[in-house]
Structures are given as C-alpha cells and as structure tokens.
Length: 295
Image (cartoon, rainbow, N blue to C red; front, side, top):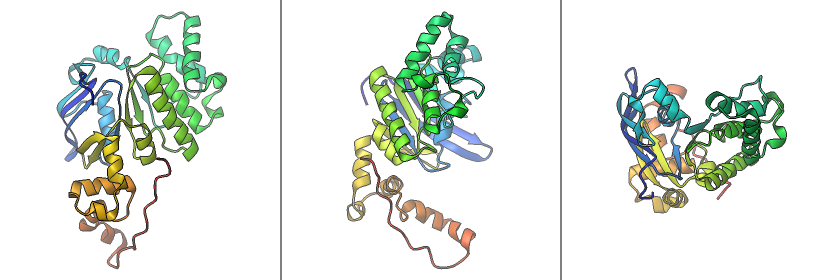
C-alpha cells in the first residue's frame, strides 16, 4: 500500500441483523488507484461489506469514510453527491430492459449533468468504446450475451468518470473465456483511468488476475489483508510445507486452493453438519482439488 491517504477507510465496522453479527469490527484501508479484492466463503460478509461501502445501509458500530468523508453521518442529499463520484457494476448488470445499451449508459449523464445531448452522445460512445461495445449501442439487453451485459453495466458505471469502481461478483455466471475477458477489462481500465477498484468475488482465478491486494473475510471477521504475492505464495505451498502454518493461514490456503480437507471442513464436521445432512456413517473420501487454470 502507498503512503497516500486512503480513499476508502473502514474502522471498527460492525453490522448485525437481529441476533446475528454479520460483520465484526472490520478495519480496512484502500489506497487511491489500487485494486482491492475482498473474498471469503458464502456468508462471510463480503457482499454486506460492499453494500455498506456504497451507503446502502449504515453500520451498527464504526465508521466508513469515502474521499475523507464519513458517509455514515451524511444526509440523503450529501450522500447522493458522494455517489456521483463512484460507480457500481452489479452482479447481473442491472440494465433497464426497455432501453438500448446506449440509453442505459446515457441515463446517469441525463439525470446528473446539464450536458448538451450531443455531448452526452459522444460521452456514451467513448464509454462503450472503452468496454468494446460501441457497435452494440442500439441493441437492447435481451439481444446481447451475459458477458456483453456485464460490459454494458461497466460502461454505465463509468459514465460520470468515477474515482472508485465497485464490482459485485463480476465473473459470476460467465464462461471461462468471457470471465477472463472481464478480468482483463478491469485491469485495463485501472491502468488507463487510474480508478480505485473494490472487487467482491470468490472466483480465485479472477482474484489473482486483477488484485493488487486481497482481503480475506471469515465469519464476519477480516482475518488477513496482504499483497496478492503473499496469497499466491500461500496458495502454491505443498501440503508438507503448509504443515507448520498457523490454523488461520491453513484456513486461507484451503479456501484459495479449494481443497476438500482442512480447517474449513473440520469446522463443519465439528458442528455436526455432515451428520445432520447424511446421518452417522463413514466420512466421504477426499478428492483432489482443482488446480487454477490461470496463473
């Protein structure tokens, strides 16, 4: 991480839903221009973290700062001004089906600027060219593929030239080739535009392609924030090399590799999870983990 003042800062962030604590005292800094990948298993709290960063709901405890402002203390009007400075790529793309791709991208410009329609049209074409969709400008969402919808959603997120881009599972539901194309697009936009990116994902190939730093969540706690290289070294460790690791690092390694045996599965076995599902009996035989396809 650079010495620059963080563009995103979380301090002591805690969120509860009823009696369940979903996030427990998160502390996280994101530097200007970096790509931070937030990962963790289902129910770890990563999507909740993203929603709180964009102001969808406030924490029960702690603070969240964007651009040096605590968004938890802002009123609706001030928060809307902050939202103009970041873009969001939703998991589904979230395009309006009754609008063409160009109209979807133009919508933020028409709603939040006083630009002349001709200037808006030029801006739309620029954004679509950035994501390789200029020729699909007049198509409707139903007429394009899932990967193209993701790119169209990204073009709309870029419409107001944001300083931060938030991505919610950008590779979800895509085939491996399209997923790789989306990853390369994220990397390219970060380099060309210098935007800060926060990416929530559990797709490890994508994470290791795009990340500068990675943050691992487990049961609502942030257990490790480190450069991508640290995680890659851990992922590549042999079983023999990993024997001397602390349990937390072995848990992270299991998640990164998708191994069937390790602290995560031992935790489930200790909770009676398998017995509740299948009844008493011999455990399932472990199978080899799948090696990552992209390096």
